[in-house]
Image (cartoon, rainbow, N blue to C red; front, side, top):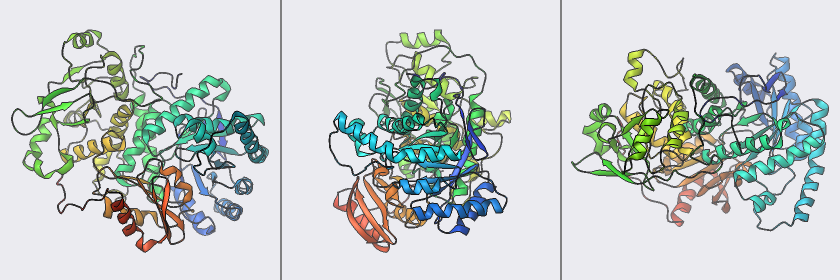
Length: 619
């Protein structure tokens, strides 16, 4: 199955156009940027003002939650209020669980988003086997519930998003396909077939997950299946990493998932989901689109090779283990490749700046100095150079040479395809060192990417490099390529090291700190997500390897918490339910007590440690 035209060179996937109000999605249209308001849908004035705020910062499509028929009915007032103020930004109703709410919302908005996992389908995490007859009977029941919405959308000429979420699949799908990318795809295709049976084609797919590896695999599999089904299955795709969280980590995780797929030509509209004020999402999304378009369109000749990895199922490239010179005492060696940790490499010029404080850098220490590691640098298009490396008796530590006219992801995919698997590979974020860029007067992007100071505590100029580094290195890690990484597009050594480690964490390649899955706020949220996330992080950020989900309501939990160890979920106004995995174990805890009770729950399961008294020092 093919998921893109050429994994070594950018070619945007050709789709049909779907109109969302005045905005065209897919076809020859630019990649669209969208977001979601966070207030109560019954607060008409706040909903109008938040929508206008998003439109004013460049949001092209605005989503509004509609959890009940009453909320859906108020969409009429919100839309009329926007139009009266001169705003024609398309509106989307976000529907979960209630077909009746979808039917009411479809009277007023430009698009309805439904989740096949909980629209007219059960999600009780019940283990049962479905016979073919029972499975068919359930599909017939879903057809009866879903068909009226299809007919209404067709009648009104509005669009629909058929959006599945990892961890939010129905019991029927889970028990046949598991909580897998395949299950996500098949769930969406079932609903798409019903729509097509009624000659309705104004729909867009999405396959969202909080884990970039799963998200990437699901979208690739979706597009491959659409290609197999035929040219008239050329529907647009909406991209998003759901529950990415906030701050630097959220931007890295979003860049890995969205950036990788955009680079492969997949994606017609995107949302960057942040646990921050919604307008903060728009410059990140726009920067991702601009970055991929700029860096992917370089002219270069690409050979015809077979990929070294399965694009639909993650598996780390099987290299041999080697030892290279480490940092510290003379003669110390660091092992890499094989099943060893993916290592973090630093240039000697940067190491010299921080050598005096290595002992105080905690988990952000460099492990290998590039110039001391005997790295073989090669142009992957040079067959003679590749043949020479492959002829060596011992495995070599190999990377792509700098200053090539070749996009980074394509260059490393080509290297991995030609190089014998036994040779470990060093990944780079860019194929030019920071000083070389300064000397040439070039920059990573045509313009600075500025993020609100309230959302990230670091200097804004550092963030110029974040999206490119996360997209390039993170995408390759999700392909299973890479045994060490080098961030060389950032001048400050401490920041480049932190960025490198955070990319490894976001890609799920090396866990060295607490991992958080936090949904963006919306009108369903039962507590202040930003304040609550900050409190939970302050209490638990020292717990290495523990994954905590922070969900504002039951829609985004327990299912969409996916593989989290513990969950903090809004159960009712002012009340919190605590989960272990997908199982609720503590109910209706007063919000004022909930963080302490979460800490107690972590203790009960043997994963609590007391925080250290000192913090690591970063350069």
